[in-house]
Length: 197
Length: 177
Image (cartoon, rainbow over all chains, first blue to last red; front, side, top):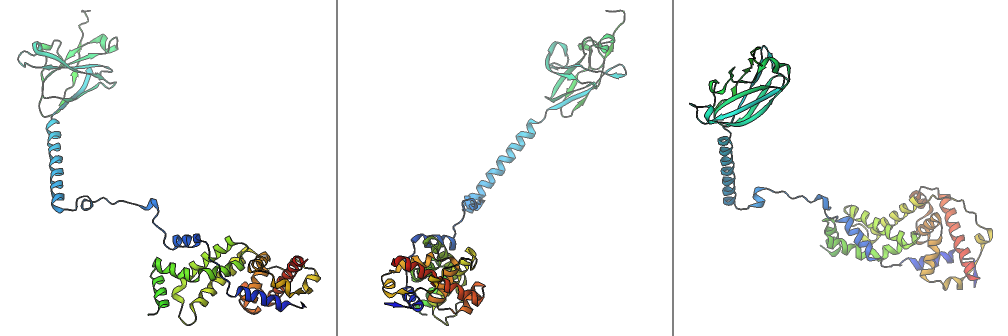
């Protein structure tokens, strides 16, 4: 049957599709559910560590706090008790000018009455271009200090190695006593006897 | 409280169980609508998902004055139409031969077509014609309403429908031979 069928086509489609239904794939709901209820992203996980989260019992927290404070106090006592070392520092002079380079040598004296007989090398320090030397962390005790100008320097031509303070020999030199304070010891080199080579 | 109120209430409280139940209740029918507006099933899935997201976000606007299914269907259709609008402009650039515009199709040719065939014919139409055809023939909107929905003139809507039918006739003629 032939018919002028614009209405016919419309009718066919309308009747076919009015109650047309087809189940969508399950992924549609899965995607939608993820969009409606997005889970937390991995990078948004944070762990808040607090005293109460680690140790829920208050009594335990108190013990731990007390123990930590005791350890800190003990460490502080040890630190301050061991920190009784002082420093010896000063300038070395060659006449009126500061010695430019050289060596400062510190000797420890065990017997103050006979210093030279009981002397032991303790430490050495370089003298800088401003004549400055320093020994830090020196243990309490008695010391002798010797300053030596740099070999073949201008100062070495006119000045001789000297003991603190301006002594040629150690047995007559001044004993530096270290107890609780830092020592500032400027040393003046002795002038060489021009007639003695 | 009846089942529908309870279901909507659960969805408004963002309860996943209620939302899934709601979705399952309407999904098949709404997917059928989306298939008519889409070029392929994948596009229809996108439309359906987008439509249901809109539905869940606007569910508080449902006043229980009409049927829930009608309200859901309306949003799905609007979502599908908007989707189509983004895909293509409604143009009249394709000229059809006069014999297609005026051709007659035998009733037998129509009667042998299955739902799947008809769906393939609709999906094969250009976006503009397909959308207008769906809105006018299946959904029952008038040309003025279609024009407002698609942002086109009433004349353009009529023309698109005319050409949609011509395209269908052409297809049927070819398949009849």
